[in-house]
Image (tube, rainbow, N blue to C red):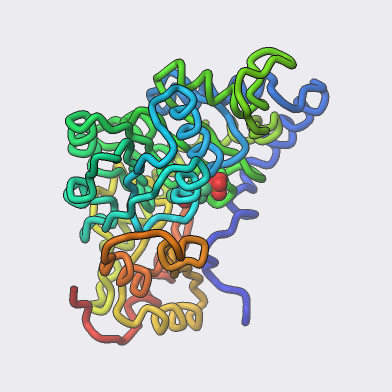
Length: 372
Ligand SMILES: *Cc1c(COP(=O)(O)O)cnc(C)c1O
């Protein structure tokens, strides 16, 4: 197929403005002789924690590790035990579920809220059991979960809250940023995220000093001081080059978010087609990692957009409970999660995206009117 006029994501173009600064930073790191556990990672940890409004950040190798290590730390601290139940949204990316099962904990899948696609507080209430110990709040597509309600429910029931903020860098609710609401949060800096590295990277955020210290120890072989290992850890460290790149891109994150919000506003005003259901929610506190529409004939819509030169992707076509990896996992009926997998489509969204081409392509699609 011919090259798309509006690719779903164009990382080369998006990173181009940063290249001179990144080249300088890389030379600085290379000349320093410190490639791990140095000044760049420490600097990024300070700057990202301050940006999010949290006291501690720990750089790790990727977003999955960030989530996994928080749960591991809670186990080390005696707050979680093997077999405890962790409630999470059924329509999340599989990494959220992997973090739970990798720790010998039991994932309990809950239907999302029909308007926001985020975990529903009602659904969490219904899923509570005597083994419930934690909730993972996934800020899906860049929109915060209803955290005031979720935190109230968690506190009433003695549950820990882990934010999966892998899609929500800089997103907020009532002015308070993602990563600062729960007991701890995991972020991913995978290249395609709103704040992306040039390789894998992740971070744990928490204002609980003990959790930060245990995560840091676990991520470095369980070693608190050189060659002394109180815990069985792993090797999960952010490297200095990625941290140097992230510091540069963090300084421009607000601009990137504004560009995405402008694009979301243009889509919301411009896409007027009864066959498409636009995403709901606040424009200005959303990080707009993804702009997700729903359509009865989603696959036809995707083909129509491609023919018009517009890229799109499906997040996600197969929910975790339908994956072979979780064939043995028990769960209740998840009809909304399954309908979402069949009807969602993500449009290109990033600062500077050609919104008019996308709007015209969406408006020229002919299909049955959306009905819930
Ligand atoms: C990307 C993502 C992750 C995993 O992050 P990696 O850095 O790719 O390991 C976890 N949860 C969600 C919701 C994500 O989108």
